[in-house]
Length: 225
Image (cartoon, rainbow, N blue to C red; front, side, top):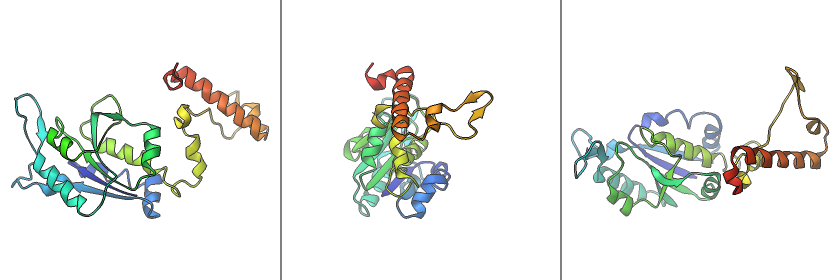
């Protein structure tokens, strides 16, 4: 999979892709992540990429020309399944979306800044708009990093145990059950006996029941309650 990210502050993305699971994915050649500096595509002497908004009002707007120049250049190199804009008014990212996207091949992600991008760029180029939550960040780079992590960890061969992802929270619209490791007793609290029984079917049933109960208590909306 190839993911290209158009960023205003590319330095914000130097760390997330060079460690842990995503580093492993890149080292194995399963995931290619390229961060592109939008200012490299500005025709302005000062590499300007924003301007005042028509109609007045506080805040600047990302200009059409640098974004269009960058997207056109990248589209000449790669066929993208989606051109994504990270924006608070986009579709809310969830596990189902990450699962579906992990089965595609190439994405281009545009990180917003300031008051956002000129609406005409959304109309001309953007095929999918994604939000990571009902709040506003200083820019879209951190949201893009979260999206790439959510997708990248699902690629076949990335996790040492691929079945691990199948028991993550939000798979099947359930939260994960409680988990335990050694020691068997800690500060007076013991590991549930069922987990020590070695009975796979009973353990699986217990975990499912715990997932249902935890989801009902903490996220009843996932159960339609």
